[in-house]
Image 1 (cartoon, helix red, strand yellow):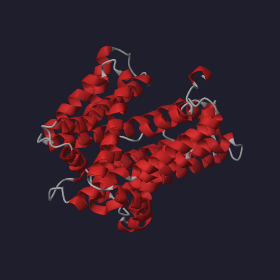
Image 2: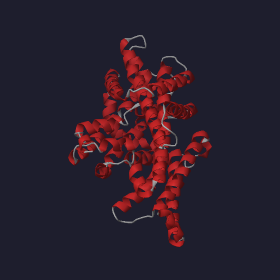
Image 3: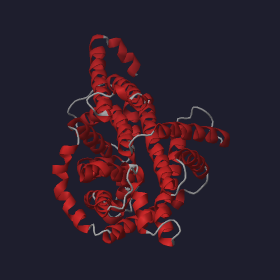
Image 4: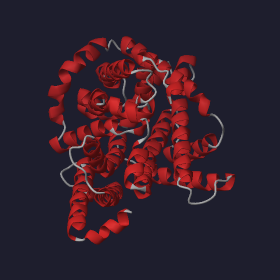
Length: 431
């Protein structure tokens, strides 16, 4: 592994930021900010805070190297590895759906209807994901950098830099606009996700030394916190300049602003700024789909072949399309899927950490039972809240998913210990 540990602090920070600075971050924050101003940056700020909290686990990941599903699977059995892999796969359905939604609303600014756009994007995601273009990631990141420069240019044109500089100081008071359960649900699920997110972990283990590891995580946290207020500041500046049409959907505000700044779809700058959003949606969407397909094929339920790869890819994209067509706010959709993964994994992972630090050791049966109960309950509540919003308790889908999932996870952990104590025959299962 040492030959792969080449990232200095700046390279690590850039990769950590790029893992979350995407269309969900940009369009989702702008969508929220249309109605609640700077408070719309909550999700983005929590990503920065989560990256700061990651400093507490960074050395653990860097030392152990393996992904969470491998670490827990090696200790507690293949069932655990499969279930964590399944929950990771299912969480990507929501992220895939967000790319479709984002791309469709970017195209809506150009006058293209939502439904045909989503179907076309689903087809494009599928085609690109099956092509050997993994190394094109630098192009997508480069276009997002171009988009960042476009946002700075937009702030300058709209005289919005004072709004941006004031936003960190106005942020905490503005949170009063968000219902406490919603505030808690978004914050906890996002911060916890960063701590156990395998997208982050894959970069953390590539730091060349511990010093670069800590410096990279700290720098990434600072950059994310600085970026967090950029989309909301652009939106507030656009509202102050009164350039937004009445009744505009929050998801299309940022593409509309960039197109307006660029002089429209018939001007080179307008085309470039829209491409800087649309192409990364295609790149991220196809990349996620490729990861989903690989995850399913790695389960080895059936032989790996081109036909099976195509079937799995099509099933994955259809699931994401179904969620995308269901609609909803971008941030709520992202965080709901985050919450399901966190709710399933956090209790077994905490049990693993306790065992590694020799504070307390739960039996293999307890951890397996915990993961089974938390995964089933979390994924069930997730899809209930997606397709039946009246099921939501406490005015927060995220808190609903996490509370029920983690509650069942703790119950499973304790139930396993009781079974181990009073029904010793279960130890035969451990062998």
